[in-house]
Amino acid sequence: MGIIKQQTIKGSLYSYLGVFIGFLTVSIIQPHTLTKEQIGLITILTSLSLMFAQFSILGFNGTARYFPYFRSEEKKHHGYLFLACMVSLLGTILFVLLTWAFKNELVGQNAKTVLFEDYYWYLVPLTVFTLFFNVFDLYARLLYNITTGLILREFTKRIFILIPLLLIYFHLVSFKMFMILWLTANIITTAQIVIRLIKDKQFSLEPNFEFLTKDMANKLIGICFFTILTGTSPLIIQNIDNLLISKKLGLDNTGIYALAFSFGSIISLPSRSLYSISYTIVAESFKTNDLKNISTVYAKSCINQIISALFIFIVMWASVDNIFAMEPPDFKAGKYAIFFVSLGYFIDSATGINLVILATSKYFRYEALFNLLLVPVIVAANIILIPIYGITGSAMASALTFFIFNLFRYIFIWVKFNMQPFNMQCLLALGTGVLVYYLSVWTVPHLQNFVIDTIVRTAFITALYLPAVYFMKLSEDINGIIDGLIAKVRRGR
Image 1 (tube, rainbow, N blue to C red):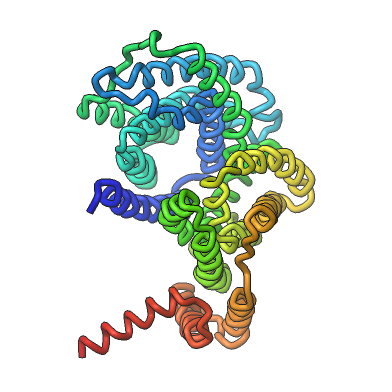
Image 2: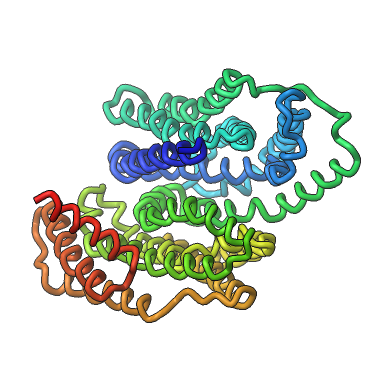
C-alpha cells in the first residue's frame, strides 16, 4: 500500500471522527451549555476568521502549482516557506488595519450585537493563527504530508474546543474564561503543526532571493492576483450568511442558524469521500483523454449521491420535530432553516462530481469564475430574504446559491464535454424517496418518546427505501454492495 493511500485512509478516519465530535459539540452540547447569543458569537468569530485568513494569505496558496520548481531538500526548497510567511505577514498588517477601520460596519450598530463588540478583538489572534496554520498546512501537503494538518484541523482542534465546553457546562469556569480557553483551543494547533515540521526537519525560513528570477516572480504575482480574486469567493459564499444574520437579526439568531446549519450539512457527508476518491480517477482520465470513463463516473456519482443524500434527507426531515425535542425551546425557530440548508446540500450532492471534473480539466479557471460571480448573488439574496423570512430566508439564499452554482457547472460540462449524467433511474430515486417520506408521515403514528419515535420512523423508512432501491436496480454500485453482503451472510451459515 502506497504512502498516499495510507495517509488518505488515516485522514478519512480522523475526518469522520472529527465530524462526529463536531456534530456532538455544536448540535447537542452547545445549545445546553451556552446561550443563543454566545453560540452566535463564536459562530461569527469563526466565520470571519476563515474569510479574513483566506484574504490575508494574499493569494499565495495559489502558487502551490509552481512548487515543483522550488522543490529541493538540499536547498530547503529555495525559500518557499519564507516567501509564504512574508506574504502572509504583509496580509496580516492589511487585515489588522481593515479590522480597525471597519469595526463598526462589521459589528453592527444594535443592542443585539453588544457581545460581539465586547469580544471583537479576539478576531485578530484567531485570524492570524488560522492564517499561519493554513500556510504551514499547505507547505506540509506540498511535502506529501497530507494528514497532519487534516487531523489537527478536523479532529484535534475539535477535541480541544470540547474541553472548555464541558468545563462551562459543569460550571467550572465563567464565560469570560471559556472564551480565553476557546481561543486557545483554536490557535494551539498552529504551534503543533510547526513542531511537526521542525521534527521532520522541513521548517526553514531561510530566504533564497537568487532563485527568485524576474520570470518566476511575475508568475507568482500573477497567480496570487488571480487567487485573491477567486480564492476568497468560496469562503465568502459559505460564511456571509452568518455575518448578515448577525448584523440584521442579532447574535441570538446567528446561534439558532448555526444549529440549523449543523444538522442540514449532514446531507453532505457521503460526498466528502466521493470527491477525494474520484479526484485521482478523473485527473488520470483527463491525462489519457478517456472522456468515456469520466462520463461513466459522473453518471454513477449522481445516482449514488441522489440515493444516499436523499435517504439522509428524508430520515432527518421525518424526525425534525424530534430533533428540537432535545434542544432548548427557542431553537425551534430554526426548523425550516434546516429544511432549506438540507435542500441546498442535497442539490450539491445530487449533481455528483461536477466540481471535480471542472477542477481537473483545462477549464479549471471557470470554476473560480463561477464562484466569483456567485458572491453578489448570495449577498443580494440574503439582503432580500432575511428581512422577509428571517434565518429561514438566509437558508433559502443558501439553497438558491447551490442551485445556480450547480446549474452553471451542469450546463458547462454538458456543452464542453457532451456529458449529461441524469437518467430515468435518477427520477425513480427521487420519486421513491418522496413517496417513502410521505408514507412515513401518514402511516407511522407519532410516539410520545422522541427517541423511540425517531428509531421507529427511521426503521420504517429504511425498510421501504432500501429494498425499493435494490429491487428497482437504480444503482449498480449499491446493488453490488448489497449482493456482496448477502453472499457473506450465506457463506457464514
